[in-house]
Amino acid sequence: MFTGASITKETVIQILEEIAVLLELTGENPFKSRAYQNAARNLEKLDTDFNDLVKQNRLSEIEGIGEAINKKIMELMQSGKLEYYETLKASIPPGHLEMLKINGLGSKKIHALYEQLGIKTIGELEYACHENRLVDLKGFGKKTQDNILAGIEKLKIYKERRLYAEVVGEAKILLQYLKKSEDVLQISIAGSLRRGYETVKDIDILAASRKPEKLAKYFAASEMVNSVTASGETKVSVVLKSGINADLRMVTENEFPYALHHFTGSKEHNTAMRGRARDMGFKMNEYGLFRKDINIKCASEEEIFSKLGLQFIEPELRENMGEIQAAETGTLPNLVTQKDVQGIFHVHTNFSDGGESLEGMARAAKEMGLNYIGISDHSQSAYYASGLKEDDIEKQHGLIAKLNEKYKPFYIFKGIESDILPDGSLDYGEEILARFDFVIAAVHSNFNMPAQDMTTRIKKALQNPYTTMLAHPTGRLLLSREPYPVNIEEIIDTAARFGKSLELNANAHRLDLDWRHCIYAKKKGVKIAINPDAHQISGLQDISFGIKIARKGWLEKDDCLNCLKLEKMKAYLRRST
Image (cartoon, rainbow, N blue to C red):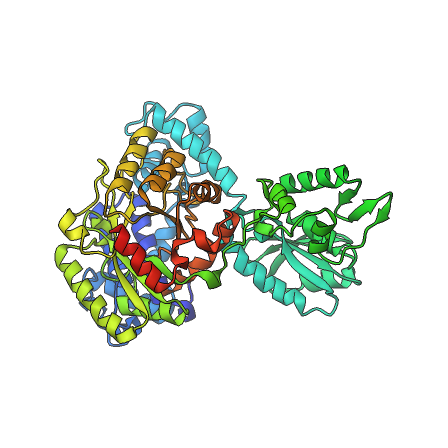
C-alpha cells in the first residue's frame, strides 16, 4: 500500500505497470492491459515536470493517458491510494504474482492454469507438474512442464539470495549505527558482501567489544530490526524490516583480525590459507595464528598475511583462484578503483527508453567528476524501446554538438546500442553506423538459439568493423534469467583477435561480464568497459557495482577501457571506427 506522502512519478509508473500485469492475470482484454503499459512508458519518458502537470490537471495531454487513466492517477495522487488497483490486486490469488518469478511462465499461462486446473500457488503448480497434468494441457506440453519444474527449483534457490546492491546499502546503514556505540572497538562488514559477491544470503558484521551483551542489545534495538531470531554471547541474528537477515558476531580486540579474515571467507580461500599456515609450522583459525600453542599477535589482517610470507590480499580476490600464489610471488594486481574511471559509456536518454534528457544525463555525469560520457540509445529494431530512426539520430547528433560546446572540456561521444540481429549483422547499414563515435553491439532477441548459433552470431558482430564493444555479453539477469547459451571463451578470443572491448555491465541485475570471465578476458588482453547501462540519472551511480566486480575479476586500471583519459579515448575510438 502506498501512502500519499510517498506518491512520486516513479510510484505512479510502478502501479500502472502492476495494473497491466494484474489485468493479464485476470484474462482481461489485452488492449486494456496494453493501455496501462503504454501510459507507464510515456510517463517514464516525460521530460516536463510531472507534479506541475498534476497540479494543473494536464496529465491527459500526455500521449496514452486518456480520461479513465488520468482519473485514476489523480485519485492516487490526491488520496494516496487507488481503489481500482487495490480491488484488482485483491481479486488475484497471491500465488499468481509469485508465479511470475518463474522463468518462462507469463501472465497468460498463469491465467490458463487457473482457469483449467484451478492452480493458485506455486506448491499446487509443482504438484500438478509432478502429476503430469500440464502435458496434455492446451498451450503447454511436456517440454513446458519440464521448464516450469526447473524454474521452480531455481526460484527456491533464488529465494535464499539477494542482489549485492539490495543488501550493501542496508549493511552500510547498519554499520554506521553500530559505530555509534561506545562498546564497539573495531567493526567491519564481513562475508560474501565484503568480498563483493554479486548475490548474497545475508549481512555479516564482525565487531570487537569488551561488553558484547550490551552491544547485542544495542544491535537488536535498531529501528531497522524487525525481529531477533537468535541471541547468544558471541552472535546475534536478526531479520531487518526489509526482510534481509543480518548477523552480528562479537569477539575480543585481540581476536578481531583473525576473525575478520575467517568470516570474510571464502571457505576455499580459508582452507588454502590454513594449509599454507600448516606447511609453515603454524596453526590458523578464527581465534589466532599459533605456533606451538603460542598465539602470534597480529594487529591487522595485513600482519597475518605478512607472517605467512604473503602480500595483503584484497577481500574481493579471496576465492582461491590463484591469489595466494600471486601474493607469494608479489604479483597481485593493483586493482582498479572508482577514482580511476574517467568516463562512462552505455547511457540512455529520452530519445529512446531513458527517463532523462540527454543534457540532464551529461550534466549529472560531469557533476560526478567524470570527463566524458558516451550516449548510446537503442537502435531502430528495438521498437519496444523506441529505437532511433534516422531523423532521431540527426537530431541527437546536432544536440550533442551544441552541448559539447556548452560543457567543454567535458565531452559527449555519439554512440548507439545497436541490436545484433539473428544473423549476426548490426542494426542499420554502414552509412549510418559510420556516423557514430562508437557502437555498442547487443543481443536483445532470440535468446533461445542453440549455443553454437548464438556464439557464431555474436562472433560475427564482433568482426564488424563498426563494433566497438559488446554489451552484457551473456544476457543474464541475476536471480531472474539464466545466461543465454553461448561459448563465452570463444567470444573473448574473438574480441581479442579483432581488437574489440567487452562490457562489464554495472547494472545490479546484470553485472555481466561475470567476474570469472573477466579473469580470462584479462589474460587475453581484452579491454573491459565498465558501463552503467543507465536509464535514469540515479543509474549512473551503478558504476560502483561494476567496479566491485571488476576488482573481483582481477582487473587493473590499464585493463579498463573507460579509465583512458579523454584524448586517449578519442584516439582509441578513431582507430576502432
